[in-house]
Structure formats: structure tokens, C-alpha cells
Length: 190
Image 1 (cartoon, rainbow, N blue to C red):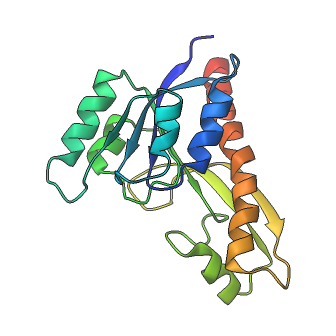
Image 2 (tube, rainbow, N blue to C red):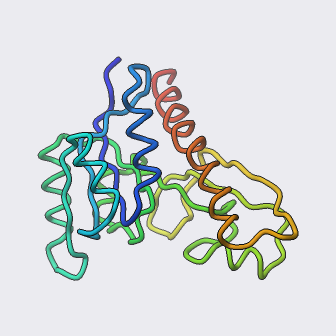
């Protein structure tokens, strides 16, 4: 199987990155992580890049030319697919255009509900019955691209932000690889 050369963008802990690295080591999984990109030079997830000897870049989104650095590295590593895994920045329209329908994100809510940040506290405030996650394509509007996979669970009366986050992350570890398999299975069959 020819694997799709993938870059994973992170900002923090990198638990979804770690999960994707684990899956990508399976011969039948359709992606190979060839680059990790982070807007946070202190992101814990960079330790996974080092541990698994995956090239990585860090960049400062305050600098004017940071997008050029990203694009140069994507080209250098022949990246054909991008996963946003806890990446807390908006992707530039230029990058979205160059990688049209080849950038996916995982979001900790059942989109279109609760786009953006602070999803869990907003769910509780809104007295939602269900929580979950969505893997979706990235387009120019925040958390608005077509959904690929959604997974959900019922919110219990005593749930707080911390355990909603924990339960959601457990679902994310299933949803993200499932979405990637679904995308590339559909491409092979079309």
C-alpha cells in the first residue's frame, strides 16, 4: 500500500498525534506521518516527534512570513494530506486553497453546534443532552467544513468540563483514524 505523506499540526499535548502515530505504523493504515508542525515551540506533542524520529517544525504565527515557512516545509517533505490535531490557530486561506479537500480537523463537539473554543463549558451552560466529536474537512469558515465522522455520548447530570473532555478525547481516538480510513477508502473506490 502506498501511504499518503501527511503532516499533523498541533498546539499542545499531542494526544491525538500520538494516537495517529500509533495507527500510522500499521501497514494497512493509509497515511504516513512525515512532518509535525506546531505554532508552540513548547508543545508537549513535539516529544512524540522526537521519540518517533519524525521531522518537525515550529513557527511563530506573529511573524509575517510564517505561512511561507509552513508551505516550504510541506513541499520539502512532499506532504499530500494534513491533519489538524488540537491545532489552536486558523489555517490561512492560501494553505486551504493549496490543499483543498486534503485538510481535516478534529473538533470536540457535534458540529455544527459549538464551533470554536470553550465547547464543554458552553455545552453545560446550554444544558445539552449529548456531547461528542466531529472530524471534518477544513474550509475558509471556522469549523464549517463537511463532516466525515461524528461520535457521541449522553451527558450525565454530574458531568463537568474535565470529564466531558476526557470522554470526548476517548471518542476522538476512534473517530480520527476512522475518518482517515473512510477518506482514502472512498478515493480508492472512486
